[in-house]
Length: 383
Image 1 (cartoon, helix red, strand yellow):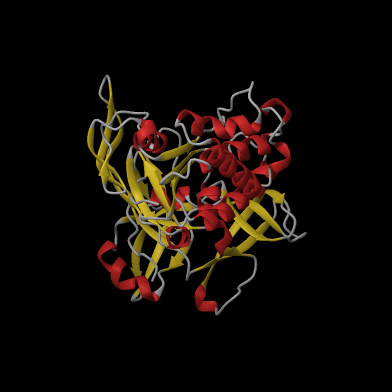
Image 2 (cartoon, rainbow, N blue to C red; image 1 turned 135 degrees about the vertical axis):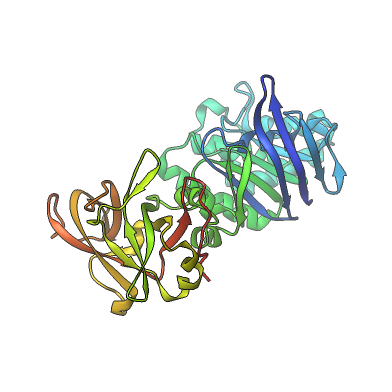
């Protein structure tokens, strides 16, 4: 078991391309941390630097209090599971799992014990004599995890290990990995671009963009309290809806008026919806009266009928464009007077049809306000 510490680590490639820019992160002993973000955000490069597969340009990496900047990957006491599993096709499952231990000259009796214990844990005992070509994708993935387990490392590193599985198998294997971590309690760093995977697996998720950490927090905290517009839009599926507009004072109350952006300039034509600023946000938004802000509403925080007190909801007239049934729920794509491609995830309702004019109710207790721009900070973090 070990703590993993990254202190202002950076990676700059020839030509000046900076893939990782001053990342500082501590992964506690036994913690499961997920690095998540879009392609090119630096998450895999960060993981590979921890593994020793990429040299660092600057900064310090410690594993169990030992600086490992110049330590070879095989001597870092970590085990890595790759996206393509990297199994030897000519070896049986048993030999694949035992191979790394044989290289380290572990006694045969210990190898056999570790391999069989790991196989039992992963429920692949019946596969030990098979070769990888005779296994399904999910079975290969478990073998790759088993090969990591037998090493009894200080930390596990996972690089998008579920990306080659079909959707149903990803869900079941994800649950297996969660149960496995609870049983083994090994420090784990896991990389994925799938925010749903990150939310369900991690004790903490680290959202990255352009080589920098945007937010490192518990999954529900990240969903409920996004620090900026990028995190708010990346975490959650379907993504959060954003509306450009301005804060106005009308008859002593604060309102958000929807507008449009043209060449970076905010326009308020007057036919956008108006949303009352919730009482708990008024003090924080008073300095923004007359200024451009962005309103964020998650799809699941729209309703076809009010579900709380009238003052906690804002009616917004919309026109339905597309309906996607999901069983008990449905995704309804709508447009306001000024914006297309707004999505609401609501309870299945046969009355919602394309081209129909309806009223959606936004839950004012769950709205967010961000500063202008794609990187705008959350102006009113929810309590």
